[in-house]
Image 1 (spheres, one colour):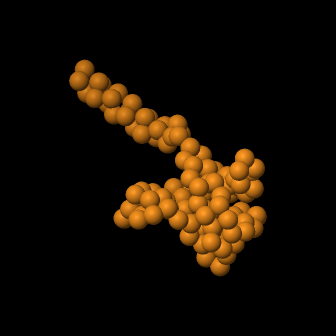
Image 2: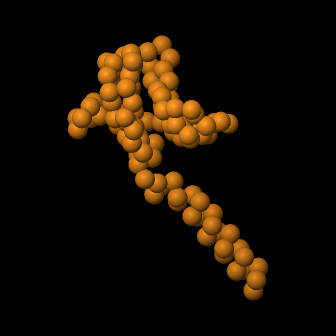
Length: 109
């Protein structure tokens, strides 16, 4: 009987581990862009933008207006980021880093 109970507990723990990211709270942060970058199909000029990440979906806002959307994924790094920043390459946003977090949001290319 103990073996069945242990197996049931392991299955339950595994299911919770998989389901937890699905119920994760959306993450929102405001980041100033010092230069223009492309997010998805949209070019963003320098300025302040609010980035909302819900699961694997990124939405960019200016005030309450949705100005850009893109898909991405969360990846872990070895060290925590010292500050919140956007990382771009050739004018295209490639990842968002968050102060004190090892996880970064990487946009699909």
